[in-house]
Length: 455
Ligand code: EPZ
Image 1 (tube, rainbow, N blue to C red):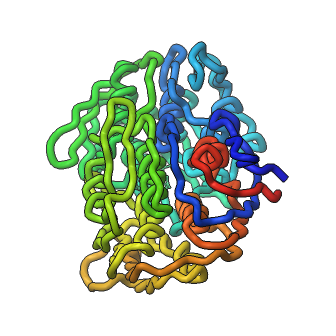
Image 2: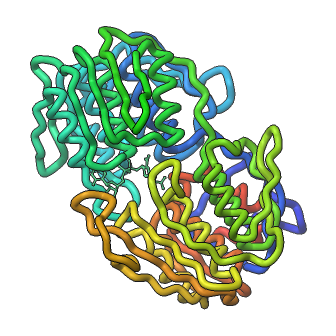
């Protein structure tokens, strides 16, 4: 059994404890500093982009996450040599010997992540064919890939759905296309970017996602020699080029992790300095944070988060950038159980991202989930019955309970709820947090959390 806090000796944030079941004793405000590295939702895509280069790429500030390990392994089975760079947290990716991998090696990655779907364009350019295993990712909806496959067909790919995954080929190569996404999908926008940059001719992408991670991917593709222009009204134009070279790129910081720790600070009534957090990419979050009764100080090297006083209720609706990110709502909901009044969190991006509230209710929170939202109206995401709303009435004291983690951001929320609650909680399935929160347990320990790793 490893205690993270023995006689006030706090585990060094540099070490990472591992374990899947935690016994957490709540009631201790989290205080101290955590540092966020590169964004999970950029680093993995940047690694895939290295396949498009004729020479090696260097990626910096790569977080130590299981999603990164899955992508590294999938690149290696395709012949990419991946090694640690000279700078801590950097990777060198050498794509010069890319060859088609063997089915069983690829299939071993089935269900592990959603990122493999982004291998399609780069592998079709390099090999003229690709096999993509069944995808994984958080169970927050059925996570379809119809926007991706429709786009790939428009580039000229032949797409064959198999029981074990998707086989693609492009015997005549890939040609630029006009693509209008039904919804500003992050993944589908990345799919188009990673395919268009080496397609023959021009591509016009309309209704594109424009999250900061997307703009960072565009920046590194431009470093490789891609010609991409970002026009008004979510239009992106790409002029295909014959060859691209490797990039040297430092990942944008992980604003989802930064927002998670900010919510933890006000939920536990503590104070957390998040090193690496930047104001520009978090403007919308910071506005909501302030209205919820949070206080933040922006420094050169990070942002300090704490309460300004009693927490206040807010009404939020998740949306695409520059709106309030869907990944931010789960940790913030825990803090809203302590706000003085009634809050509403309206989830419009995923159809099943409120399941985590069951555990909060079990701990004493007053949350009512309306599965079809609170108002009728056109669904944002076509062909998806989304729009759930949670009505949270606070403040309600939370008490420890036995809880099981449902997904990445929900799992983070469960841990923060246990830290906010009085008494002891047992939280199982914490291992999933290694997908999106680097050195999570060590950071918790460094912030003074009182917990044991049980198994
Ligand atoms: C990315 O997922 C992120 N994941 C998600 O973060 C994030 O919540 C999401 O973007 C929205 O910002 C990664 O980058 C690895 P989408 P992605 O395509 O690309 C529907 C986290 O916690 N859709 O923008 O899968 C889809 O079902 C994760 O870090 C289709 O219908 O998101 C969803 O309802 C969770 N057909 C909506 O669009 C498609 O072909 C948004 O999905 C694709 C998507």
